[in-house]
Length: 116
Length: 111
View 1 (cartoon, one colour):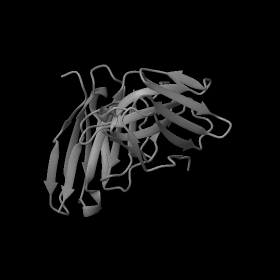
View 2 (view 1 turned 90 degrees about the horizontal axis):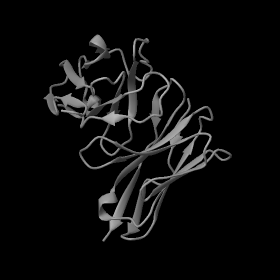
View 3 (view 1 turned 180 degrees about the horizontal axis):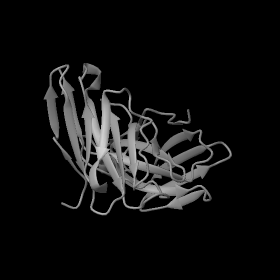
View 4 (view 1 turned 60 degrees about the horizontal axis):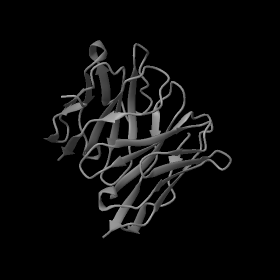
């Protein structure tokens, strides 16, 4: 498809398990973001990849959270030893302009994570 | 740290009326200010943006106003329709930095 693709769309896991969330950005987009959105809340920034620059990891809430982006395309967000407070929708977005850009992001539909 | 916030969490308007959604920002170094619309169960969608050297920009039925003196941003929707019901987020971006989002305003359109 032409849009940002995220998988899985829904994930239910038990407390303490590890989860991986995947994001396929729009082809050619060099900037990729991960945000977290709790129910009825705003978008909490997690991490930002921009081209070949070092990622901005300033939003990752703890060392249980990590993300990588392979080959400048697909990104995986990993949450280790999940906790109930990790339950949220994880949104990925990409942008076609490297570096200096207007802030127009293209979002996926999100991955809803439920930790029991 | 720097933040972007909204005055009203929920706004109810009659169909056909104009809507005004407000946002306060604190990062005077931001270059772009953006409005996003998020419908239930979907990711946010870009509506319109404005560069920091402008004070007004118009789109289709939407107008964004920027007042840098008081660090205020607003989104005006003309002739609000039921399809406009959603959560609206303001956001800001400075240069090579990340896009930062505000807390959002829920717009409810009354038929």
